[in-house]
Amino acid sequence: MIYVSDKAKDKVDKLKKDSGLGDDYFLRVSVVGGGCSGLSYKLDFDNEPQPRDQVFEDQGVKVVTDLKSFLYLCDTTLDFSDGLNGKGFHFSNPNASRSCGCGESFAV
Image 1: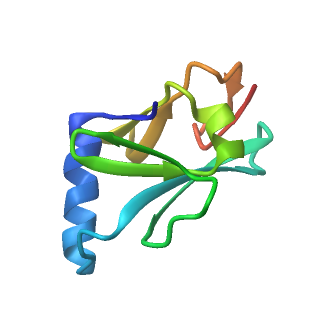
Image 2: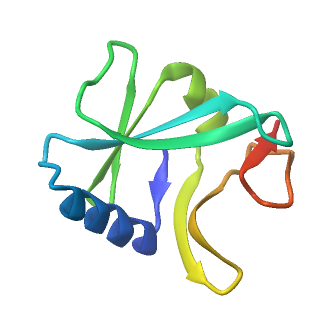
C-alpha cells in the first residue's frame, strides 16, 4: 500500500483542479535511478494505466505505480510540506536505509 497524508491529498486535489484534469487522471509514483543516494522519486499525473501497474487508493487519491517501483515504495506515505524548511512533496519511506540531505533521493 502507498498512503497519502491529509496535506498531500489537499495539494494533489488542488493541482488536478488547477490543471483542469478530470477524474480519469491519477497520481503516478515511481522510482528512478539518480540523485545523491542512487534512487529518486518521480511524481506525475497520468490517465493511461499499464498492464502490470499496482493500483491503490487512500483518502480518495488514486495512486498508481509500476511493479518494480512498488518494491521500493511498499508502505510509503506521501506527504506535503509548506513550511519554512522547504515546500513540496516528500516521502516517508520505511524501506529507505538512507537519504540525501535534500530529501530528493534515497538508498535501500
